[in-house]
Image (cartoon, rainbow, N blue to C red; front, side, top):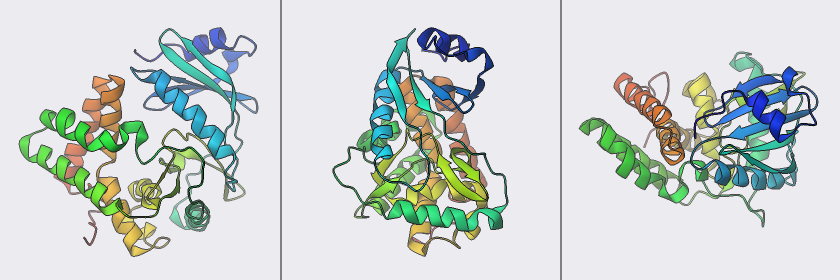
Length: 286
């Protein structure tokens, strides 16, 4: 289904006990979000797989809450609401503010948080494996069968090759907890430190380099190299080269042709510009 035109109205029907008229609105690729400051947050998922994704997100948030992370995370409140083909949940509000500080101001807090995440090895907690949000183990097939045919021949071949390379380089890497979308837009700060994380719908037990890839996109590989080992940086660059293909695959699953084609356009442009692995044009050693 299409995204709800007015998420405040959707939330008012789903949770009438709150005054959604004063909510602050935000959105992701597959969510509409209404935030009641210091109170609750409504996350409304849409698309062909909205209910499945929301159910996975709720399970994930419960697991994350028990991992002992050094930051505040959202907790689900109540049951999933299904309305007009969309699915929504309420979560607790996570305090903190976004940061637009340059790299020197965020380097140490990011390094400390990544180190904390890498120390969390899989136990009995039921998180999915890598890229469950965009097909999981079926992601390479989705790229090859549904996305590559929409690309020029040479670009399609590179898309398949880069996808296969990601699977190869992460093979055998001991899985740890990864947020899955570890960008500045999902980190909340207070007193120059990360105190909260949000949007765990990509969380998994997986290669820690997955959480480095978005930082490369924002700050560049040369700066991120200051806080991670060379082999992790190399794998992260491989992951970064396929981020647009991951979004395109998720859009394919959700039935969102517009987002799928937009993501494929991003992939094609980065490939042409030589910025697939790093905005500065750097490439992994292997």
